[in-house]
Length: 229
Ligand SMILES: Nc1ccn([C@@H]2O[C@H](COP(=O)(O)OP(=O)(O)OP(=O)(O)O)[C@@H](O)[C@H]2O)c(=O)n1
Ligand SMILES: C[C@](O)(CO)[C@H](O)COP(=O)(O)O
Image (tube, rainbow, N blue to C red; front, side, top):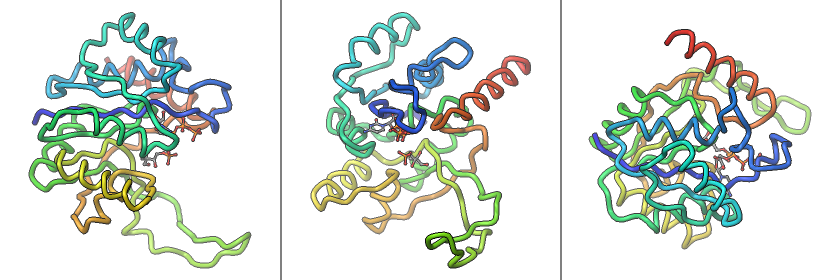
């Protein structure tokens, strides 16, 4: 199933504490952003990449695209204040396609098998998101006191990619903007419209590089993959 992908890359990386966009930090000598881009560059089903960037970082990212021979980028629209705004900025710049994936540029370990499964379910059902089952006991806490232990069997930790029929996500993003709703993922915007969103079981390796220790885990994942060939 063919698709185009939106990669929000206009964050600040505050929780990484590196004093710069964390996507430029290296994992085994290659910037995190380029690891992510190479996955979609290599995937024959991906027909276009849209990268939301900070205007002041655009020229540097264009240099990186050339250096790493990334050819599928169709546009680098300006990102916004929040991740949702950055994604919306790409959706507004795109031509109508059948299936669009949204994937955090900060998740450089997604596999082509999971991407393919998401695109297929989105084609059949309209909306599909990646996630993994919660592994720890989950509790709601008020202040420092446990308010409730939440039944774990139905809890999933949600990741990206999130795949949609383009017109469904575009409408959901437009409505959210109109009413001033801010979600932490794209599925929330689609759920608000009353549309079912399906889960596709992903991998615990599909980490988001968020804090310093993620870089250690990330390098370990890359080394394992290199050793496995
Ligand atoms: N206004 C924003 C905020 C985030 N992102 C992107 O959304 C993805 C997930 O966001 P997150 O991990 O929260 O990244 P940052 O916002 O950079 O991190 P922090 O919240 O620690 O500042 C990242 O690829 C990030 O670049 C974006 O395009 N535009
Ligand atoms: C969309 C997301 O990756 C789902 O887990 C995540 O919410 C994005 O990160 P943020 O820290 O909430 O911006």
